[in-house]
Image (cartoon, rainbow, N blue to C red; front, side, top):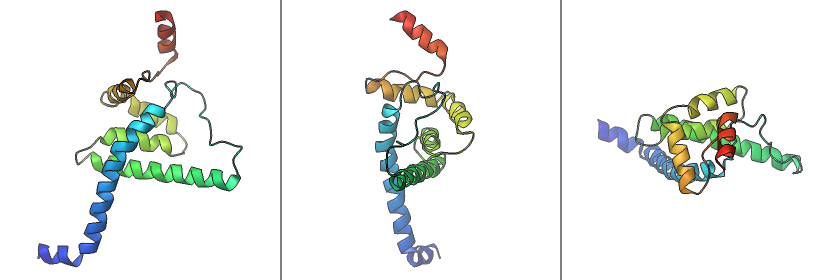
Length: 147
């Protein structure tokens, strides 16, 4: 019975396996790149810089849609990784940072303060020669005092 089900849905299973493999390796490659490029003061900036206003409106809309689509893919992949091997919380965090929606900052801060997320992010950043993420102005003052 199971072999018949597999045989009948062979094409769907091939597509799902390919998508799963692509998403897995894509997150392994893209997550460190995104975390390394993130500015250390990302969480204390009052506003984020939007996609460049100087670009043509159609290009700006296309980039915004692409960024949000990538964010949704990361969000779904992260949720799946909560149940299978992978960096689920970290992938969800990246997905949320890419998607535009009201209240996003509050959710990002809640995720970044999770005990398993921030140390991993800072470890990836330090291996790339970047400073740790700054979560409040007190960290900036302590950093300035130490220099």
